[in-house]
Length: 425
Image 1 (tube, rainbow, N blue to C red):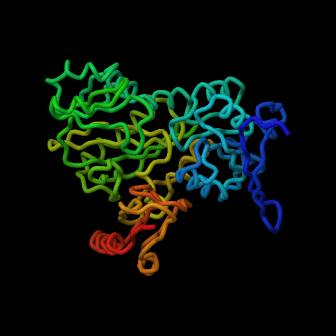
Image 2 (tube, one colour):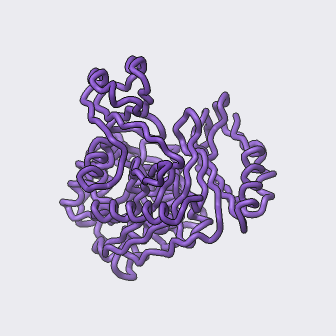
Image 3 (cartoon, rainbow, N blue to C red):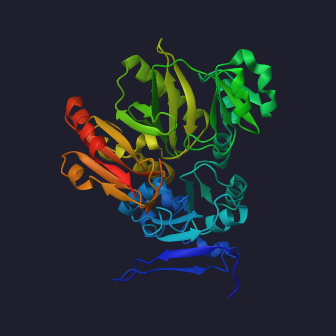
């Protein structure tokens, strides 16, 4: 059998004893596209036929895709996933898992031809292939043009400026050698324009002496913002233009790692700041003409000005708590949006804190969840593990959402969880 370098791991649910196997897929790129349209793609979205054969393709096999799949199961949506890691969190729970690169044109094109609708759980995908899939008649959400804009932090900032969306001042740099020309702009943060993720690709440039540790390549220099809080808003827009916005949440980042440590929902902010943040998020998703879920991270300054930091056109870490703390989770909402269904209610059910479960520093190897039994005894504590067998320092291994009738009970239970649950090896 001739191999094309791409593997498929198929989880079969058609028998009483499901089996999983991996094999090469030599005809992956030679697909007869007409045979992969059992129904019109828009019938998935616009009629009650969606549960009779619609296939959703997800680029990226991480924890965001895993939780999206869990919502798809409730609607009988078949899911296929493309990821380079055969041990990615989505493998084992999706209908079919393809081992391949979501950055590779041929891999993405061949994968997309097997789906009726294609979406993402990570931005760093091959947009040229997605544009070709659209040309071939496939449905892709969010639009490849939106993904391309978000992939480049410089284009993001230019979009905000052009559309009068409040954001921190910035300067675009072609090369780090240009930094000495902007001494008067300090203190600032240097951000690489592409491929930054989960805190990677960001460097504080506060004094000229920091230039020697600058990041290489095209980047932007963003003025350091004096802020009181970091917040986020998740907003959804479906195929007919209907929108829904979630309550604002407050974000607290891990010192030194630039990773979200925990969030509080809803945020402890004034009503005027909350409305301002929601309106900005709605303005962005409408001006992008985007379908799906959009997460908007923002700063709140001491004088209650709201400035956009970054956006993500997909389910986001700042929305994990919506599974238990809101009427409709961000994952179901994303599914509703891209399928063209009515959007769900976004109201908070109760106050909540969401904690990211990070691998403890100093430990690497097979994960051990110390204190797990103790935290599972606590009422209103919801554990989500991501299927990652190996831990390392600060690796995202899961999250815990803590809910309660009032903030005092939520905070007390949160302290119990953080003091007790540790991921070691």
